[in-house]
Image 1 (cartoon, rainbow, N blue to C red):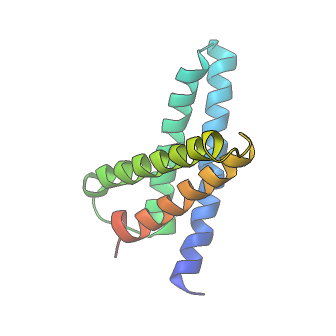
Image 2: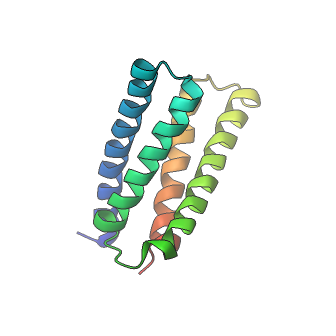
Amino acid sequence: MSSFIRQSLRFGVVGLVNTTIGLIAIFSIIFFFNANPLIANAIGYSMGLMVSFALNRFWTFEYTQDVVKVLPSYFLVAAVAYLLNLSAVLLGTYHLGIGPYLVQFFGVGIYTVTMFLGCRYFVFKA
């Protein structure tokens, strides 16, 4: 199996794990602490992002360099991916008339591809 395919599959598994952890955190923070959903979302998203970083660093891309060297790049790629996601959702919803639920799939797809390629060729490059 090529490294690209292996990394793609692992990246997908990591995505499922960090999404699950993020959602559990969000729901728990809202339920147990009666927190504002925006605050819970920010905390849950941050937790998922850190889990994603750790798992992708060690398992998906098997990168052993110092965390300090790659963490800022990882956050930059995540920010770019999020902005592209948000742009696609806004463009699709308000300019192309795509339904607000369906357009989320396009946004998630753009986010996922951007994160994977950014991690593979920029953050955790060999």
